[in-house]
Length: 206
Image 1 (tube, rainbow, N blue to C red):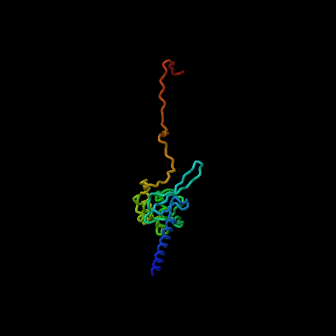
Image 2: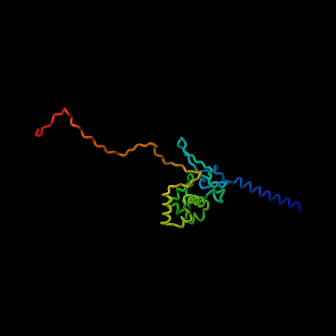
Image 3: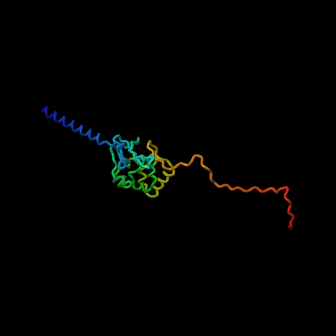
């Protein structure tokens, strides 16, 4: 009886150890992901991964994946599937995390489609929070297709506000110089010439 109890206890401990080891080895670390798996992934600590691109002096592009401070809701150890990337209208090479894509009506339609909204909880959770940062309730946005959806998106566009967060996408638009030259053309009128005192007066008829 005692031997059976010990055997059962050892079996349970071995199973628990195997599960722990598997969880440790199988945990997602953002810094270990490449450009084909980084975007929209969630680490074992429930932090979202972000893909960043750097251009070296040689002109070569280098991709790095890092852990952001943005937490996923009830998700961890998640590598987004190719099916969800396609169904939601996303791109694997998406840099940073921002709400800019919500301004595109085509993307909103993809996001709200049954193939995405009903099957891809990780992506829906991400854009639910991004939309909330803009003051937009994502379920209402998805319900309001057509004119109402365009109205909400236009309001989002006019606000010019990007959801705050510790992760910022790279700004690749060159800024205008601080002191720029005003090139607006101005019209000048030549001053009237004063008659010279020594010049002989002209008599009509000559």
